[in-house]
Image 1 (cartoon, rainbow, N blue to C red):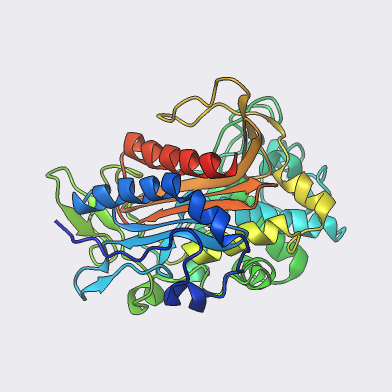
Image 2: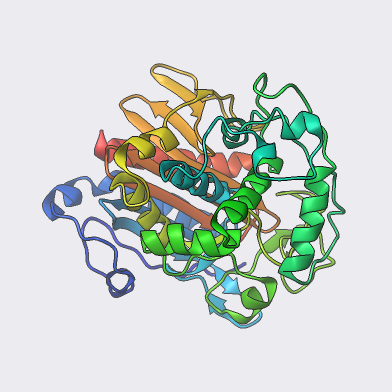
Length: 401
């Protein structure tokens, strides 16, 4: 059983690791002190999970960019005895999908692409029914009907060039699953095609574009699409510990032959050489807080285009295994690569993701200046993850409502 490492901030207490992170300070310390009990209860709930070795990672809740709950638990690298810290970076899985859609909305704001443009305007080699019918808007909203040829989940790639070539062939071999715009189907094909479009339009690799125009622009100093080589060498990036059928956990990054049981059964997040537009960027909790601030402050997009990016496009059912958001004054929608959910007086935008040996989720409470982040290098059962996120939501709405 791993021992939880604890670094906490409650109310407006100043702590050196957080001060060093450069997050924006907020006023109103006395008010936050009065509101600290729901936040403390959330912290203690996750702390108990960590003591039972059911959670390893970082939780963070921030108001106006300043953390009011910040805790690190467990080990980032058990072999080297490195603990998770508040600034440890984690594989985000699909929680990084919104970066590819944000890149496209930025290009649209600059007049370099249009939302009604067809895929074939930018990319070649696709089937005519894909190239001539699928629009930018449909790829942004998972309504394109696009698919990719299935790849061997045990495939290990060793360079960016190899991965790009394999992915491009798989994309162009895919068939439409339904008439574009008539249904919604969550997936990665449309997002990876958007990444190719970013490269085509800007002349930069997708990774370089996101690093410069999203991560660096938002002050997300540690966020990157790291290669497997960089991941292994960097002690500040958490290793994913995949749950096995016998209840043990294996370091996925050091054992590429091992496969996940949950969080993408049969896969291993260390096998791809680098993440793609459909997922697997890396970020720390403070960096995701900065992302929330950048969206709220219109750093990455002007106010109208921020609204276009985060605004609801159509009703969205919950993912398999997740509880329905139904109830009084509650509704879930799909935005441009984001979930956009109404919860009473709150509109919450963000995304989650899971890999073998990891889970990630970030939520921005738009207009209320609150952001919540959960990052784990354990793959969590859906029920437990939903309970953690529910406790986070209860804590934020209790103090902000």
